[in-house]
Length: 285
Ligand code: FE2
Image 1 (cartoon, rainbow, N blue to C red):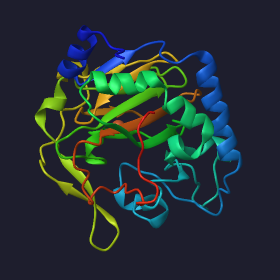
Image 2 (spheres, rainbow, N blue to C red):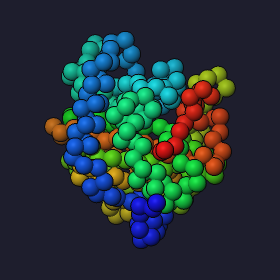
Image 3 (tube, rainbow, N blue to C red):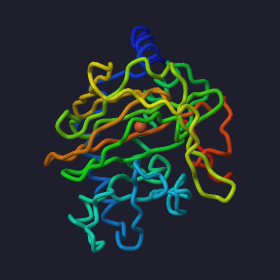
């Protein structure tokens, strides 16, 4: 079974991304939102404060993060706490994301993530043996939703040869106002700049492969905003440079992402995300 047209496949390989409006229904999106809310209900915020930050990667290098590859765990917005260490707004409005195996550990996300159309799409763009390796529910909270600086997803998840593709679902409308993504079309052809590795001591660290900075995010430099209506699926090539600004609006910008790798490629032990041998990454079937 194939899902994409040849024009769509060509556009994905040319631009490094492809937008598929209306992929998920309003009902699907409402079900994901409700389930994410239930997961947060069950999370003891005080016991597991772990701040997620793309600005200072050191903050993520704790066991709670590095052992989350086959679990459901919760990561706060960087600005969630006041100087006294208290949450500025209630728990549901303070969490940056849930990760990293919702697709395996939660029945609602499992069902959504293993839609046969997604298996077809990943094979259409060239994967031999697509495996669901990572999933995240991203809240981009009103007022405190943090920026995500320009990056390539393969920095955080890579295979040899490169095969990572992100499946990004707009659970709510993503607009210029609430921090939609921006991307640099064609930028996936320029190679990987950084690699986020496990270190010998069990921590994580960033290896710089190419220290040249990304161009500033302006339309003049070729960046395009990926505004997306609820239900839109955006395919993102693992090497595509993309980012999103902070959310200073009063509206959240929920998104769900799955990262798929080709099981036909080597998955190095230096990836931060490692699955236990008794609980390996599985495909769409
Ligand atoms: Fe990303």
